[in-house]
Image 1 (spheres, rainbow over the protein chains, first blue to last red):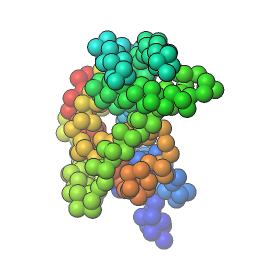
Image 2: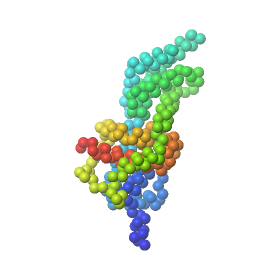
Image 3: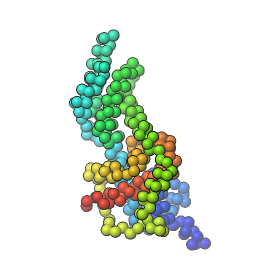
Image 4: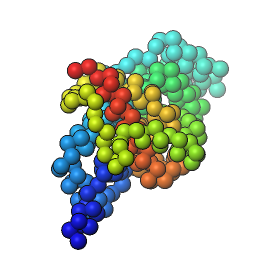
Length: 87
Length: 189
């Protein structure tokens, strides 16, 4: 009985990392939440993965979010735009 | 007639001068390509010029131009996303690329020499990440970034890309594994 319970609760690393990504997209079930918590508590490679995954997400958000620095559109292109409008 | 035309010409001259850099910056961050961003900004002004009659001055010109640009950005990705539709053969094939990360019990294979790496959230890391993204299968590149580019909910993204929710996070999972490996190989401590 205990063994059966443990089998249900213990995830493989592959499955655990899948859940880490699933969580970003969809809601985990309560069982999945517990499974993941238990796994990352004892598996350092998966808890590293969890951190790394977060860093990647943070950087992606940053990359696609304009910062304070405004880039310059080339003056050639600006001229080209105005020229095209005259047509 | 000539005077209206002259008027809108002057108006657009000032708009290009005032707003084109900001529009370009935004488009660049959403597409990671200077050329694409320049084209999108040009298209935006062209569209705006042709439908200037529908601009009633209710909103700020800047807001109006940004709304047009955002539609152009989504269109750009929508066109591209036709290539992203993932056939089940491709999918099976691509999924195999990360099987080697885990052993027969689906546990991590022993990391060889990668003791703990400290990734830092800095510009250097960002450019490494972008480089690694370019190495991913093309249809995955957009999947993993779509959330940040389109600012949309998962369900809408799935609809846009014609994939199921579970496909979506499975692809994210595989893409992340490949990114992890690529970053670990290239990150200089």
